[in-house]
Length: 158
Image 1: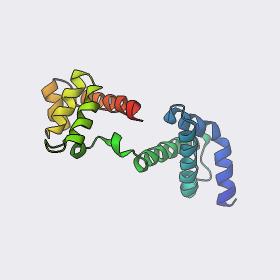
Image 2: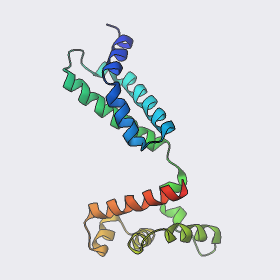
Image 3: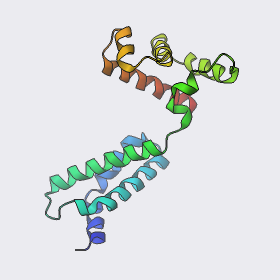
Image 4: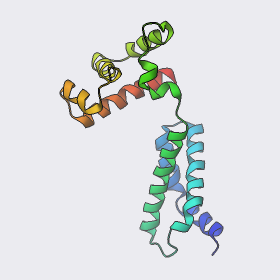
């Protein structure tokens, strides 16, 4: 069997899995779902030769899950919105740059006191483990709080 026919069959067998993973990752956004499905299909096509022809159905399904996750991560990495990256250079505006300073203050005003403190420490140059120690939380709790704060800003500014 040629690889194009095999690709078609693998997609047909796993179409529900691909759809479910992409819809869940896109959180209901129809256009993003379509983009993610296309990215997954491309990644499957590029990697179809790595899937053994005698693979068991569970092995094929696990391989497909891995391809889906890799494709979604790749899509997110390639399509970030610069404002939502919250890089420290953009947020740590100097006193001279009033526009950036106002943007920073506006963004931080939507956050809770704890989230604001978290970003202030990050802007002061502290690393994740240092910030977690200062806040009295674990490093994973720090990253979770940071992620939630960024998601909150993403919803506001998207």
